[in-house]
Length: 402
Image 1 (cartoon, one colour):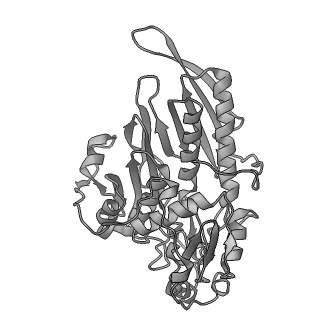
Image 2 (tube, rainbow, N blue to C red):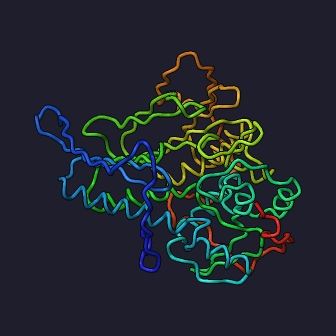
Image 3 (cartoon, rainbow, N blue to C red):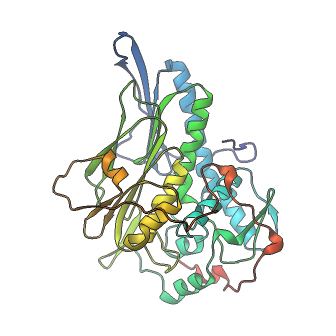
């Protein structure tokens, strides 16, 4: 995965006051490599990106080379964070300003791969993963680092934006030229930004000869290889996020990500409002506390799927998982029941033996026959501006007053 940094240098991230990170941590440990008696170095470091701690472990690389690789990974994360930031000056803010004009413009190279991939993922998810609803996200007050306790938006403002029905299909790409015919479109790629950064970092680590590494960004993981002969151990949080529900062993190339109602939310008059917005209703998704997805490979796909399955709820999660090619799913509903696919049930080690568990296979269907896949940035469809459909939409900024 290649992203051109020349026009968009990463901005230096200010140090955050997190109790888990007072100073950068650099540890170098040695693990037994088995019967040969040799030692395999495991280099571990931590930095801040996407308002969270990111842990990186690199196996089998000399310290100086691992330090250089670590610097590149951190730069990748900071670069992507700057490029996709939805409310601070940068490429994404400028793209949304230009989309509102309805005129074609040259999209920044830093965003094009993720925009293309997000178009394909939105199609696969039946638009339940919908990064075109940035105006709704802003209306709810989630275009800020720390959501404030505030009254929810007025129903009429939500209804106006839902009626305008912005989707990724309203974006038209012709080479690098981008435009939209729907003034309600405002891109918000936060749901997949961390996964995209992890995928890019893994590509760059492989280019440096790294065969085994793990990136843990706020609990979401992308791993390759193993930890000096042992599986990477990835915890899954319970519905409230305070305790570990289970462990997944990861080897090879895989991602484990979670979408939940506890990571980013606010409380007003005793009611909690979270950031996973259902584009069909304009309100936070209901019925599901969290969704964890295990995927072979792409963390971007895993993040989009987790988001879409949480919106899909108990009625459609199996259908949407099948459409997106996801086999390993763990979903916790509002009653605390754990719903899993057989594939996930066989992989996860649950720590609470008293949990209510429902295992349901995903039935193959033909609902997504011929749909584009999104395993790589270059696989997204390219829309033709000559085939744009007419659409009436209220001026989005008049509604997005939150």
